[in-house]
Length: 380
Image (cartoon, rainbow, N blue to C red; front, side, top):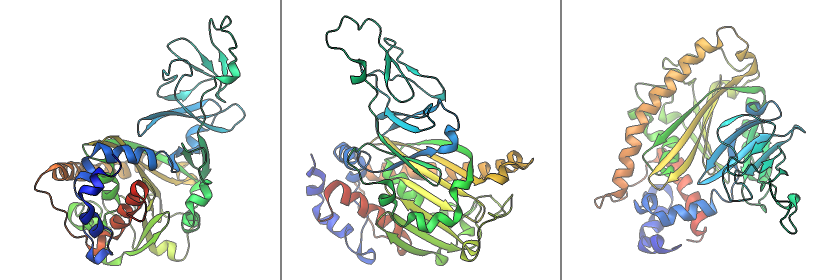
């Protein structure tokens, strides 16, 4: 299973591995194969640090949210000791999900047989287990995941032997520390399902080549292609561009600029990507980010978020003016959705042959190399 698609397209993959000027996009099988999808679930989503939210979403003990990450159900919560915790959302009895949705709870009670867990994942109640020989509640707590945070962002990792979050982030923290994300708060989240492979969605969000065409009527003209300065890193990439791009349809920020920015950070914006699935966009007035998750090989979901300095939230007109940003997001989503679905149809067609990458697809090229490295190894 691990080499079938690669062996079929060995020559094409070798061409994709070449430098950007000589490279080609990947064959469509890499976006339609269930074998590839299985490798990604194991070697990417099963081993990398994944951003799952913001700390302010869990401001009180008992606050929780459930998520599905590449087929794995999980719970994120703040415990009574004020510690962030992450668990598989799987009852240790029969495997039922112990909770759904989000909210605030004192404990998690499985709806099937009422096994009850506290916010630290410890089993506190299991009806009619007294007669089970050798049964010990301490052996049947919820299985925990690695969890850590930076800048107010919460990350989880399914690999118990993973490297630390800070080592994984590398210089990402240095590049974006001046934006002080820990002093920002979320404005809104938009969840969108796409009829496409998750990689097509992720690559679309790092593809600046299409800005001047597909997004010419929304925000594309605020980010001229020729102004982009691309830098690749082990953790992802940045595309720095000169100009103001606040993600409003008229290109005008509604609250002013972040009060702590200075120098080049007032002159430039960033379109960045943090491996494996987080688009990160730092502007003079806000930070917005998007995470892409697989549902199955032909479907995916993206969650788009925006946040502003906490003091902006205190303004009496914050909600009113925030609506202008949400309107822009919805326009951009509408512009992208049909095009991304069309990509998936193209990938599945016998007529598809991978074309060359533009110099404005440097980020796409870098993301593709990362995915190949993870599922096949850097030597392939």
